[in-house]
Length: 311
Image 1 (tube, helix red, strand yellow):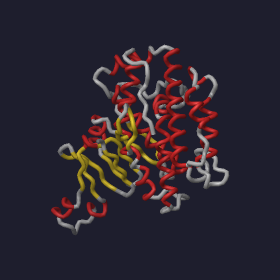
Image 2 (cartoon, one colour):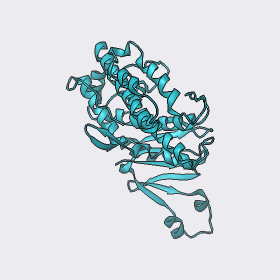
Image 3 (cartoon, rainbow, N blue to C red):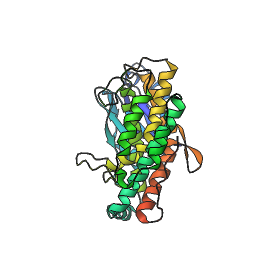
Image 4 (tube, rainbow, N blue to C red):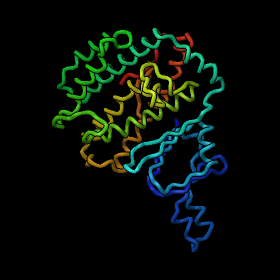
């Protein structure tokens, strides 16, 4: 299972013998310390074990050699802004041995197929939202959500995704008066935003590894968005983030007004949360690989349905 590493303090990150090497500036710069002590203070991580690396401090130094090796191993590298929210994403340009062939299949995908794939995606998303409501808000009526999930038409012509979302967000946080979902909204929107950014990076990484263009979506088409396909495919995975946030709120151990290191640690567990996919339990990061592989097979004509998880 690929690991997610988070760096929130000043650090020197480099590569040696196929390992990521972490050194602390206060140790490196202290000339009074013996070299053997400095070396013993290093931490190393096998690069082939890494799936996502998050850089969340302006005083992190990373070498070009390490970045090159991370890209060779299809590791997503996320950089954060001054608000300590994910702002940038590094992915390899060459993610698959037959990438051009797969690009061709993706580009030549017919409009009817794209509409069917979006129909499947929306139905899976609504079904997972219903499962989250049923588990975490047991008093909430969810029969309508099950009906909507079963009635999604090609390209979601009736916008059942929007109808389901309105009902879902109105009921997901009954303990928060007048909660409104929005990127700039009040907490726990900050937790949701951070969790979605992690899932987006995991999906984009998997798409590249499958040999697909994260930019060319099946539904999202914003010309300013470099990750339209990632935003499409992550939709049924969003409820995993919602469930994690519900559990954080239920634990009542943190003040969610500020996105602290402890809260980030909880959200960074999302890639290893188990989901049910293909009839068995699997960590989310592995499940995403199953989903993106099935998407390519839909493009190539080998499958007719994308394999999505069940919450």
